[in-house]
Image (cartoon, rainbow, N blue to C red; front, top):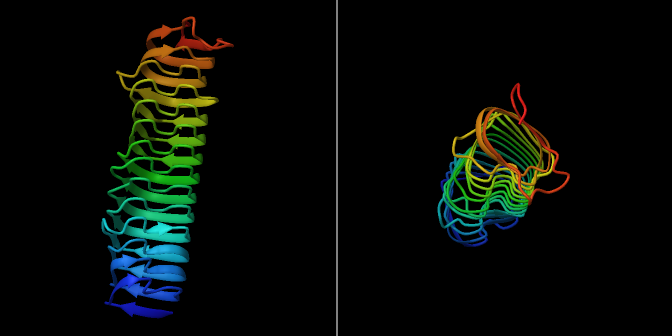
Length: 284
């Protein structure tokens, strides 16, 4: 493997069609598409501030690197990436990529990040700012996700999260096959129009959560005191610990809580309109 160390590149495609290459303490400056149509590339302690540095790259690793704000859209149409201990300050990262492994990665501008990606696994990932990260993704597994980005995980399938802390409006819209464990989810309109969402040992905050959902399952979950109008038009099986303020027009299933402030069943409830709602050890 050829090693390039302590060098600076800029301009148009300076490392075009390079293979079996290791970059150490390299900077990629102004210009576009520095590492394009390449394979088997290792980058360590490098800094990127030019546009589109990694496009159409196969089998590559990025370790202890930094992507400045100018390195927008840095990783597209590339596969089999391992990224560790990296800071990203640029938007629109990770587009149409497959087989990604990330550890200890901080993304400070998560706008339109992770679009149409599949087979993404990660540990200790942070997303800050921006909108619509993880749009149209499939097969995602992350342990330790912190995110304050808006509209995360829309139109996704086969998502598994552990120990997540997500503050986001409209998260998990129209998702399918989602499992979330030991997490905190804060935001309005959570998981609307979703299918097969399972929440285990989670705490939820926000208004009008979990509506229009099909086959929704909650196990040992808690709700913030301000949550109301939950489960409208959803088919649901829910084991709620503690108090829930208001449940409105669930379609079918079973909801059990330690205490319930109020239940709204009005003329707009959808058939079969046979959801059982119980305070533990008694029935409403």
